[in-house]
Length: 343
Image (cartoon, rainbow, N blue to C red):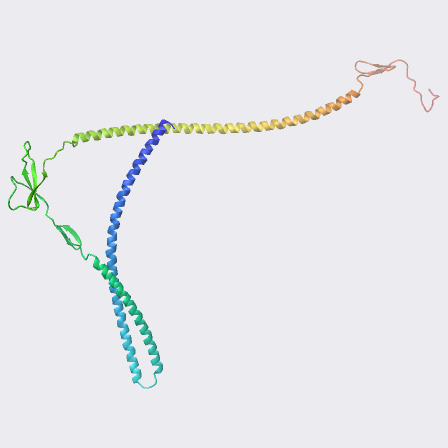
């Protein structure tokens, strides 16, 4: 890795560390805010839950009271109906049996409602116990007023009063008394006193020592120096990044060029391989033809060896340089075998 790449990598690591640190700080702040919001929501939810539970209990008690009234009314109506049936003429056995069955049903319903009432009573007891442990209302402390759950500070503001000597009467505990300093060499400096537990307490002085603090000019100079240094660092980093970018672009161009050259080389190699294969086939074919021609030459040589190298003229024959054969001397006598006596 080159120097510029190391520099760029270091800068990226520097930014990553600081960004992670800032993200962590923001996450912690968000976590604290979320925790406070969650605690407040939990308290509000508990108060709302208690209010809802109390309302629900009251509603169920009202509902049970209404159900009990309906049961009483139904029982009275049933008894009245039975009395009327007994008083009237005729046999009302079936009606009595029906009414008895309804009465039994109502009795079962009453028992069930009694069980529900008992369970609700237990729940009411538990809720009353929980409500008893809760604070009914906020308690205002010293200097605090609470109106309609709005908390306000009622404490009077602290006052400052310049005196030549500390008072001995009409002392206000909410007042800081400023007495001219007894220290020599000081001007417009006061000692500060408050009256606490029936005694004076010196709480400090109006003198301010700014020896170890930066002046406005020094702070401005410091910020200017830091700003200049940061600008130089930024400029240097920008130059380095620009240089690295240029170098990277150049390398990319070289890689592209090499890739193109490699592709062209591969194409040439492929063409040469194809040509070499074609040449090998041609050589193989020529070798086959040469072998066949060699066999033919051998056969022809054998045939030629059996032939007469030159014509030999016989009696009455002449052969010239052009191998033209001519007859010389007396005419030949032809003997006819069929007529041997004829010449």
